[in-house]
Length: 244
Ligand SMILES: [Fe+2]
Ligand SMILES: [Fe+2]
Figure (spheres, rainbow, N blue to C red):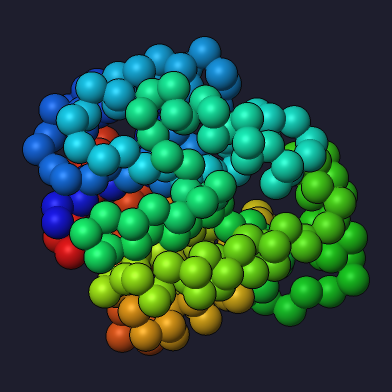
């Protein structure tokens, strides 16, 4: 099964030409992994381009899709599912999908400050909480755990009928997935990159492949012996093609 995957296309910034190329690429499955567009108009244009892809079309959300829906993060799956269905996509945050023994489980994931590379002092915590309220319209980090529990529940539901499970999480879950080419690590934005909690999903037997994004740095990683790809768009590598 050939999969073409892309996250973080941010069409307002990078335009739509990569999407046209993706829609014309031959593959069995197209997966969009969040942060495709910021606003509703560009999202409609982006997904109408993707809709011409002839294979199975799957999507999961990024923080930008969630924040464009307003402050009640995690409470819009029904209406978002309806939006994606208009373009022939299934929203994996709402429910998993299985094709020929391969199941796909995915959601945006979220952050819980666990990826910060320095000690979290009370001052840093206070600043991070202020930023969280303003920029993310979220008062606590509990949505990270909600997303984790949903992935574990989805795995338990699909595993009996699956040979392999593909897991997508927009946010990252290992310090190795963060920028490495910097000298000091005390960037407060690192607190919002993701959560180490998601590594546990990859300990599950049938999980065969992982997708992540959000950092805008494509890369390959291993967790519990499973291959993980950061599928972020870049100008040089607009999408990732995988075989399972
Ligand atoms: Fe992004
Ligand atoms: Fe993101």
